[in-house]
Every structure is written in C-alpha cells, then in structure tokens.
Length: 488
Image 1 (cartoon, rainbow, N blue to C red):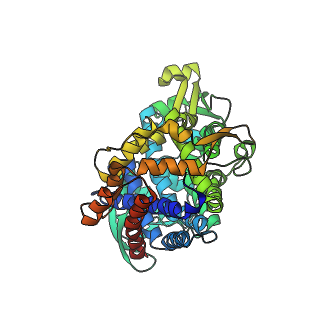
Image 2: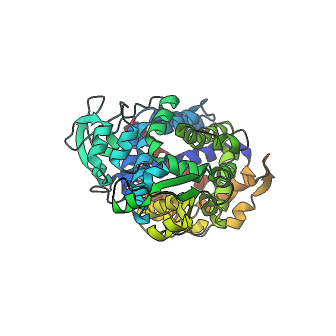
Image 3: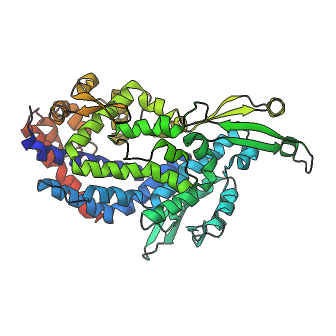
C-alpha cells in the first residue's frame, strides 16, 4: 500500500502529466492547417488561439505557482481556483461557445426545414438576426479587410454563411502586437472579471434563448404563424394558427435530468450549484450560463482544499459515467420535442416527436475530434492517445471494475449515489496501470522527448515501483516547466 507520506510525489505526477497533456494537446491543435471546414474545426481554432494567449498571461503564472507549490509540499492558496477562473472568465470562452453554437443551430434549422420559423422560437441563427439582438452594444470584431469594426457590422456581412468567420486575418491587438487569427478569435467582448463575462455570455447567447429555455429549463414555446405567408412568401393572408408547441417531453427539465447528475458525479452536492427550482426560474440567459460554469469554479476550490481525495473520486466517477453509458444518457436529456397542429403538420410535412437533442449534438461534435464517448472507458483512453499522438492507441486495457472497487458508494443529500474513492487504493491502482512500457511510451511520445535518448531511457527503465514513477516524473516535469517558462 502506498501511504499518505508519498502524496507529494503523486501530486507532482498528477500535475505534470495533466499539464503536459494539456499543453501538448494545444500544440497539436495549432498544427491544423487552412481554414476551418466545419464546426469542430472552428472550435479548435478558437480554443487554441485563446488558450495560447491565456497561458502566456495569468493562467501560465498560476499554473507555474501550482507546480512550484506542489514541489514544496503545499499548494498556494487559491492557485488552482485562480487558474480556472482566469481560463473561464475570458473572451476566448465566449468566442468558443459562439463558434460552436451558431453554426450548429443554423445547420440544424436548415436540416429541419425550420429556418423560416426560427424567430418564432426565440432563435436567431444567422449573422444579421444575431446582429439585431446586439444592436447598440459596443463589442467589436476584425473584418475580412483587417480593420476592427462594431461586431454587428461584421455579423451583417456574415449573412447566413458562418464560414465567413473562419477567414484568417492579420491585425494589431490591444497591446500593439501583430496577430494572425480567424475572425472568431478577434471578437472583443471586454471580459475582465466574472460580471463582464456573464454579461458577454448573456448578450452572445440571446440568439440561443429558445434552445436554452426549452432544453435546459423545460419551458414551452407556442409557435403562432401565418403558415401560407411563411411557406409561399405571400403578404397579409389571414391564416394564422398555433402551428406547433415546442416543449420538453420528459416532464422534468434538462438541467434536473442532465446537468445535476453530472455535477453530483464530479463531487458536487446540493448547495454547490443552483437548485432545480432556482435554475428553472431564471429569465436571464447570463444566469443560466452562470449556473453551468459556476460549479466548475466551486469544484476547483474543492480540489484545491483536498486535491487527492477529490481527484481520485472524480477519476472513479468519470470512468463509471463512460463505462455504463450514463454520460450519454444524462446528455440525452437536453432535448426539444415538438407537437404540431394537424393542419400545420399536413401542410408543412412535420411530425410530432423529438425535434432536436442538444446533448447528442454536443457529443457528436466531440466525437468528430476523435474522442470516443460512445464506447467503454478503454475505448475512450485509446481514442485519446490517438488524438494526442496521431497514432493508433495501443494501451493495455484498464480493469475498470478493479478501479471502481477502489471506492465505496456514497449517498449525497439529494439522494444521488456516487463513488467516494479510497485515495491510497486508487493511487496504487493507477501506479500499477501507468507503470507499463506501452503507457509510458504513449506519454513520452506525446512530448518533445519522443525519439530522443532521454525518452527511450524513460521507456526502457519503466518499473512498477516508486523509483520507476519518480524516474518518469523527473523526465516529464522539466518538459512541463520549460513550456511554462517559454510561455511566460
């Protein structure tokens, strides 16, 4: 059994491997050439550009402090929470959510043949429609000509073609530095703190209100339209009807059925996130986003206060979510259903039932990047290695049942059942799993040690012992620190 006196070494391993993987993943994403061809490419471009800028600033400093604190045997107060806060409260998160949401919303409505009905559902899926929701706001964006303009002007130029925003341009940022990036990345929301972040998320998300309220809050939308006017483009034909009701068929909101169970599995309990009744009563889109992102900051604080118990329990619960299919099940509750007037259904060719599943669409986007969320936990591990190294994963299968056996069932105050890990058992299990030459080779090959004598020495010297673990940490930690110093 690995005792608590060895936690310092294990925490160094956790931070070293997590940060190396994070930074190497960002480096891999930066290698994507050309403009984005679909929504996932747009997302990756936004994420890399924003992350690169963030790591060079306060986040890089906070991460360096966290690593230094762990090496000294203690965490600097608020270092992890400050790092996560700086990452979330940023323009790049607003732009990332926008770059995923609006192209996806537009394409979904086109596929459903419902673009003409979008505004009746409080959905504003095109550039000009969103511009109307942002009229009078001072947000700016670089346009194709390289000049910075009001965001509404650029959105009007976008029209219905969101690939317009994939255009790469060179421009001077607020610090006077020349940058080359996509139009998505050049949007400035003026996020400086929590308040300005949620203001920006509220304004950016106004065009998504219909989806958020129905899928997340379980509200209804009754669509009253002049069917002939919409279909035949005639004017002033008195043929209005309640053509459809858009609703959440499960009786409970997507927040209650989908997000709350995920929060619980991450280690959060009642009081760590808004209650169901509170969330379902929100009128502000910004408040909804705060209920989604806020628990992440609470989680960061909990990890900071008890890193080993929290991280080991999160690992066990996440493995269970994927292995049992609960993750897909929970996400599948973020749905919109439709019930149509019989005449409208006959004229428009629609039928009652599921209209759109937001959770399934998000999973599909993630899986387009190569991560397998539809199989078991080992499938996910293999796909992660392939995404990271660009090679087929050749990892030994993890005994997921053995990992779950390192924890006991715990009942939360809301009655939810989750796993509470025995940190010693989980660490011992993970050391035995990680100290395999195929695992270490995959990790080393994802770093700049790949193909070097030093990297080969780490791989060949693998042994399932504290010394073997120490050797791997000693090899990887300088790589991490070198990247942080270069970024800073």
